[in-house]
Image (cartoon, rainbow, N blue to C red; front, side, top):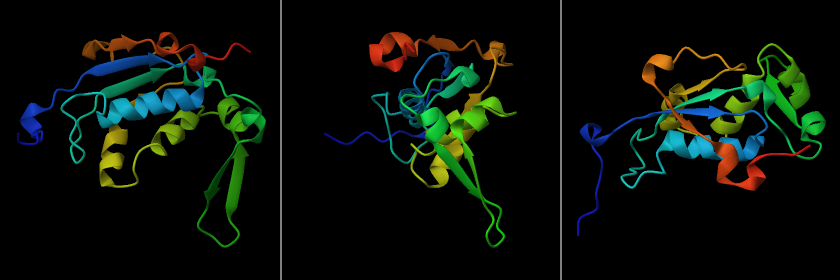
Length: 154
C-alpha cells in the first residue's frame, strides 16, 4: 500500500465560524490550530496547507481559568537596548485589540516555520459579533458542545 500524499488539486477548504463567547482560551486555541493545520482530515499531509479558513467572533469575551487574566504576561521587545515591554492578559482584553490574545495563543500552537505563517493568514479574528464573511457561508462549529470543560461557569 502506497502512502497518500495530497497535491494542491486534492485540497478542499471550508469556512468555519466559531463563537468564542465563554470558551476557555487554551481549549479554543488548540481546536483552531488543528482546523488551520488540517489534522482533522483523513487526507492530512504535513507539508501542505490542508486546513480550513477559520472565523472567530466574540474574541473579547474569551475566558481564562485561574488567575491567568491578571497574572499572564505578554512580552514584546522594541528592538532597542532595554526595550522589553509587558502587558497582562486583562490589559490586552480591555484594550483596543482584544483579539490578539486569541491570535497569539493559536500562533504559539502552530510549528514555527514558513507554513505556519501561511496558515495564520487563514485565521480571521473579530472582537465583536460582526464579520464580513457572510458570502463564504461558513459552517458553525459549536465548541461549547464538544466538551463540557470547554466552557467556564464563573
